[in-house]
Image (cartoon, rainbow, N blue to C red; front, side, top):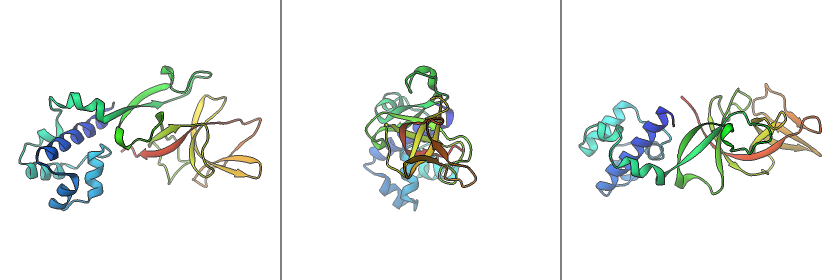
Amino acid sequence: MDKSDKLKIVFSINLKQQLDKRGLNQTDMARDLNLPETTVSNWMKASTYPRPDKIQLMADYFNIRRSELTEEQPTNLIEIQPNFAKIPILGTIACGEPILAEQNVEGYMYEFSELLPAGNIFALVAKGDSMEPTIPNGSKVLIREQGEVEYGEIAAVLVNGDTEATLKRVKKQGDTILLMPDNPKHEPYIVDQNNPAKIIGKAISFKVTL
């Protein structure tokens, strides 16, 4: 878990605890502080981290110190595991090895368990601008492991001898399968005997890394 992910998770847990103590929910706080509920929801899901002025606003609202929102509390340790799932981030795939083999994992991220679909979830870091503007370079993309996707959906696909995982939109032209970039500057990848490809999962969401 990198530092920014941990900060978001700790804040999310502390915020939930403060709301629960007072019998409030995120809608109540958003209304009382005149905040967009989607913004508060993203804090609760540990998707984003609030600006310092918003942290102070919430500390004043709860009549607590800022540190009670931003720093790890003793009870946090027992809450992180049930509330958050540990998602492996894949790097280069070792040829012939299972997708989630240890040597393929270059790190982990944490996601709120209740918001994840059923199934095996992993993540890829988008490299390059081929899927922009849909998925910016450097985004962490959550993938649900599955061997097929609907045409037009974005998939994680193994190419280059099953050693590289790329993100592309799967389309069909006649009997030809195309892996399409969203950025028109890039050429499609035509799947054939000379350029085989294997779908390993469907893109379900992504986070922009700031």
